[in-house]
Length: 130
Image (tube, rainbow, N blue to C red; front, side, top):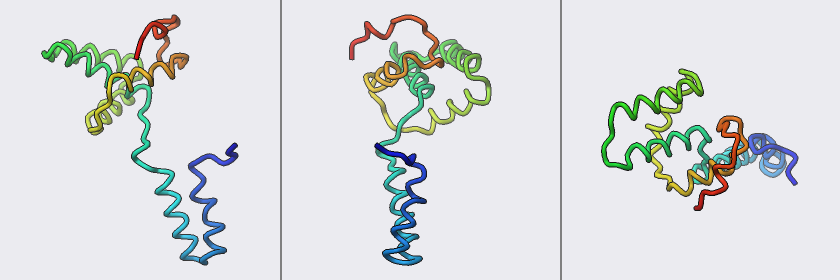
């Protein structure tokens, strides 16, 4: 059971670092803990970004990417999340070079099926097989 959120572990690590090594020990424990907590290999993508990546896979599925398909996805995200957030999502999608499998993306959606962002209201995800 953890009582302290991960984002505060670096600050908490200063105390034992100070006792063991003074100022340098405190700084070293802070930086080491921050690197461990912010490990990029365990990065998680947001539900919205997973939905956008899955949409891009669907657009590319037939081998032809049309402007109409791109506009429909762009319009959907703008209407659902607003212009500012949708532009941020499109920028994140373009910058994120990690390739996610469809199974990973569907798992993220299934794990968040009760999230109001999806707003499905039915059990469409129950029949999906990974």
